[in-house]
Structures are given as structure tokens and as C-alpha cells.
Image 1: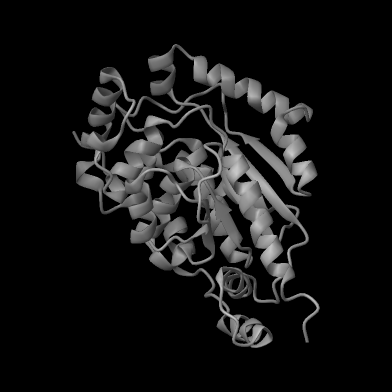
Image 2 (image 1 turned 60 degrees about the vertical axis):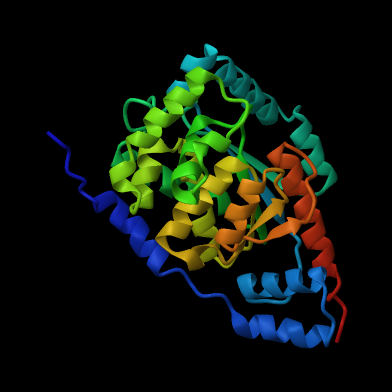
Length: 315
């Protein structure tokens, strides 16, 4: 017997998305007036920042939030190696000894890492939903803690050791990314990916249901972080395929929910670039800097901060 979807936990998320504050066009117009007739990429970033924040562009408290979650399918495919490595990375960041701690210190960016029940992986998406509806909605709500303590630019991504099949599955379903285009997948992994995709064929129009069935806790939490930032007029930078998967979930709910979001660096895969164009998610860096999302976010934040300095001190 097919289980009926209650919709109740997700109704709160849908209502939040429908009631997100609009971009502040008056603040954008004021910044444009400060800049006169100048027109370049930096100027566009300044105007976007003002529209997001409702004030003149100035970044004083940028923050990076990383979400870490584990997956039963990945553990099965690699014998738990990726989960063990992820646990080690979280421990190093917590101790302050990881390279990302040093990078954030050098760039004057605050850093938070959220351990999303690493010892309890989400279920194997090739044979059952990753999460139940209540847990998925609860993790989205938990992700909203990313802005606790305050920030004027939120940089958010998943802390990962590799791209998960979970993120690839969501991007395939919601972004039109054909599985055949994914390189470097073993036959076993490809088989499990195809099984996961077949499990959501009747739910494609409900992106939250796609998230529940295919997404990890880190993907759900990133959704929450993006929504919380919008509700508090905080611009957002994202990077990495998991963050893109989260963005696709929100875009399918409401396209305008990503107006305050930019992608940090240009991806290397043409199909991913096409998806960014399709959902009108602009890129800060027109080149690819690193396969590491944290590094891309830091450089992207630096470019945005430098752009904002252009208008400071002007009449």
C-alpha cells in the first residue's frame, strides 16, 4: 500500500518560501545613483548587494557555514571511508587545526561547521527515501541557525570529501542533468544512481519530496540557511554541487527565492553551467579557482568585499 504524503511538515516551508521579503529596489537605486554611469561587473555586484541587504554595500562580518552529513549509500560503496574522512575533517575544524580555519582567519571570515548526526547516515536512496518528511523539514529548520550571531554575507556549502550520489541525483532530476553525462562513476554507483532516480519519477513536481527522498541532511540544511538569510536580508554565496542541489530545490518551489544568492566560482562542467543559466544563478568569479567549495567561497567573498569598497567614501 502506498504511503500518503501528509504535506503538513512541508507546508510550513512552503509558506515561508511564499512570504519571503522582496529585494529592495530602492536601496539598489540609491547605490546606482552613487555610482553614476559606471558599468562593470563590480558595480553590478554592489547594486545586487544593496538590493539584497537594503543598505549601501559594505561587508564587515562575512561568515562561512559548512554542513556535514553522511549517507548509507556512500558508506556501502566505499566501505565507510568517506564518512571516516568527513568525521576527521569536522574534528580538525572544531580543534581549529584545519586549513579552512587558517584561510578564514587570513580572510577575516567567521567559520561555523555543523555536524548533522554524522554517526547516523541517511538511508540508502537507491532502495528507500533518505529521510521522512518530519526529519527533512526539521533539518531545513535547523539549517536556519546558520545566521545565528549575525553576518552581512553568508557563504554556505557542504563539507564533503567527494561529490555524493545524493547531490547528483537531485541535480539530475531537478536540473535536467542526464546521468549518462556523469563521468568517473563506477558501474555499481551508476546502477544505484539510476535506481534512486526511478524512485522519484512520480514526485518530480514536488521538489521538497525530491529532497526528502534523495537529499542528505546537509542539502536540507543548506536550503534552510538560504531561506533564513533571505528573511533577514543577508546576501548569500554558495559553491559545490550539494549547494547547487539545494538551490534547485528552492528554485522549483519559487524562482524568486534565489534572487539573493550567487554562485561563487564558474564550474568546469558545461552541463552545470547550463543549469546555472537556466535558473538565473549568476557567478561571482568568471573562472574556476578550486574543486574545493570552501576555497571558492573565500575567494568569491573577497571579490564581493572588494567590490563593495568601491562605493565606500563616495558622496
